[in-house]
Image (cartoon, rainbow, N blue to C red; front, side):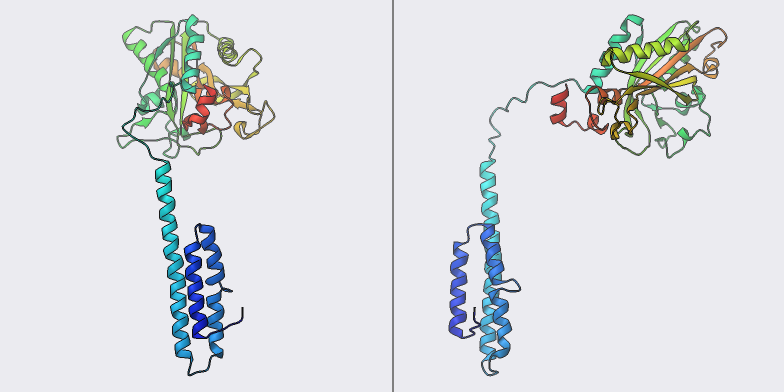
Length: 351
């Protein structure tokens, strides 16, 4: 438009703006008005640019009218924005109205958590073998968590950066193997080392490590210890394979890799082919196609001696299966956090 700075034209522009403001019904309408009136190329800026061409004697009057127009435009748009926000809020509140005096809508029955499903299934598989289920404390002493299990004081697992310590010097157990130590001590003190020992325990464990697709600082384990004369590594491998085949089906692939644990010798790590990628490699399995689901091995002679058992006459094995990972693999969850996030959209689909 031509820059007409006559008082009559400025007043007409002000009237036109007021009419447009009344007709603005949405935020989009206001955005268009901002573009036309207060942007760098809008009417107000163009009018102020033309002020330099106004004769000196007329500038004070014209400038005052332009300032009046600018203030009216800015305040008008701002006021209309507030009004539209208020209207939108009222409409939302009206549409979301809830009568709290009415009976609640049925939310459906609850379901068993995936980890509990895995724990119950393993317990059922072990029932014919005569295992006793016991529970142990999650806040442990260093003796039960480390010393009694042949883990020396210089072992990295005992560092502050790897273990959660309390102010009293106790630790959040780093593995449920601490229950094994308590059971063997109880048998040594009160039951004259009565054999066999067949005990299973499960619950939470804690490690101060970086969380990723296959690790969390808190996780669940299923611990088992079996002690009596004549047990061999073959018994251990056979029992773990039996549990995993019963849990996942006969076609599930199982393998064992060498490991090192201070409380077992020899030590092995049971693995299953990744259910998420079918062995092709993905973040859930670290690209390997296989998922390590626990640690196991024959109980170290030093641990047997600690609890008054003669390793020349008695042998035993123990394993700790990560029920968090087992649950993730059972339900094809891409990362371990999904087991613990309690997202009902996921849990309703898998249990």
